[in-house]
Image (cartoon, rainbow, N blue to C red; front, side, top):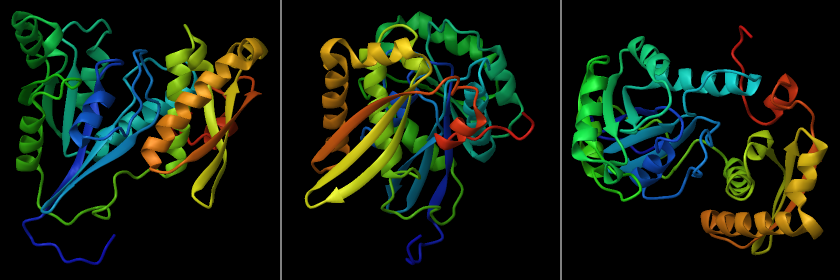
Length: 303
C-alpha cells in the first residue's frame, strides 16, 4: 500500500462476478477493466482460480473478483475451485450474478449459495445481442422470483455495452474507505500466474474435447535477461497419450501453442519473451493434494 492519505470520500470494496460456466464472467471482467486480464475461450469452465481485477480511479478502488463457474465437484480440483468461489462470496460487498438468457446449466444450487450471503446482488443479463428482448425479460423475471435482486443490467460484455451503468451502480453502493491495494496495482496475482494462464488459454483454444481439462501449466523459470524475459513452462497431463497429442506430429502442435502463448505474454508484459514449453506426465494430478498445492490451488480443510 502506498502512503498517500486519501480523503474520507474515497470508496473501496470487493465485487464478485459469479455465475454458471460459460456465461461470460471473464469477458465481463476484461471489459470492465478495459484490459485482458483473464483468459477467455469458448469452452466451459476455463477459469479455475479466483482472480482480482482492480479498477482504480482517483476516489475509488473496485476489486472485481472473477470466479470459477459454479459446478458439481468431481475431482479435488473442483473442490478447490468451489472453495475459491465460496471465499469470493464471503469477501464481497456486491455480487454481480452473470446470467445467459438461454442458460443450459442448472442454476438452483448456485442460487441457494447466493441466498446464504448478505451481499447486494446485481443481476447482469449478458449476451443480449444474441437474444430477443422477450427472452431477456423472461429470464429477469424468472431469476427475480428466486433471489432478492437489487439492480438489473442488460449488457453485452463482448460488445462492451451497458458497462458504465454497472460501474456507476457499484460506485454508488460501495462503502467509503481507503484502498485495499496500491493504486497502481491491477491484480493480486504475480506475473508468473498470468504467464501460466496464457499458456493454458492456448491449450483450450487448440486442443479438442476433454484434453484441455486434463492439463495444468506450471512456470519453472521466469528470468529477465537484458531486454528479454526467458520463461520455462511445464504442461502437466495425466496420460501418456495426451503428451503425444499436445506435442503433435513432428512437434507442430506444441509449436502453434508456444507461438500464440508467447505473443499473448509479450502483449501482457510489454516486453520481448522467449518461451520454452515442456510436457510432463503427472498421473492423477487433479486428485493429488500435493500437486494441486504446487499449482496454486487451496482445498477446503474438511476434505
